[in-house]
Image (cartoon, rainbow, N blue to C red; front, side):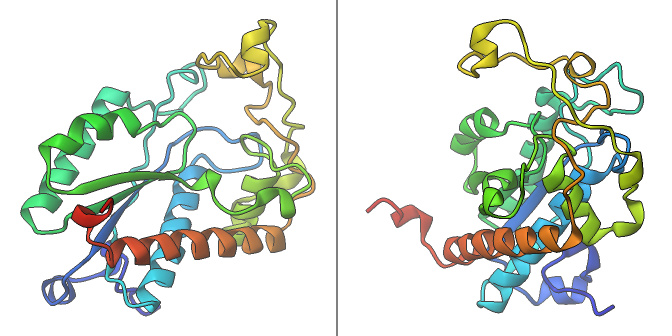
Amino acid sequence: MTPRPYILAETNWKAVDATRYDVAVLPWGATEAHNFHLPYATDVMECDHVAAESARVAWEKGAKVIVLPTIPFGVQTGQMDIRLCINMNPSTQAAVLADVVHSLDVQGIHKLVVLNGHGGNNFQQMIRELQPKTRVFLCAVNWWTLGDPKSIFDEPGDHAGELETAFVMHVRPDLVRLEDAGPGTERRPSLRGLREKWVWSPRPWTRVSADTGVGDPRAATAEKGARHLAAVAEQLGGFLHELATTDVERMYE
């Protein structure tokens, strides 16, 4: 396979030294159980593919985008009783993010998009604290908010449901065991505020779901996953191109 010039892991120093990059993308996933039928690296693979396809769209429009290697560990404090769900605390994430940003800053890459692919991760407060300390323009995108999943999926689901299952069926069908999937039934909290979602609290995952899934995956198909990825990549790729060509110092003038 020909190395993709917008994927750092596939790019060599000769190419990097000759390229002036406009935007870096840092995909950030998680390592956790995804029902009985999807791999632990589901969030990592999703972030990898969304970042790569979005960067391709932007690159083909003329933007010099570089995708950094995906960070595979996320916040799992509600899943510590599930074997091999690997937790990275928010304070650790903040330190890792600060080091990455500092590296980009001193190397002259002054726009960074943090691409989040895991519900337990939240980078807004980290960016609020870090932004005044760096010349790098920082923003975060949760790829789950992109596209129009309800136009493609019967019921997208929240975790290892139809959307995620379809995505992995598209990019890594060899890793999907749909015949083993649990129903993804969610146990609802008894407190009204939590149930109606105007109160937030971390979910104790094994009390929420017997199979670690939330959402029925059985209607998933690879074709649905391909359609959704294409829509997400077009939307995010357009933003990456726009960001690359925008003077962020004059963005609000």
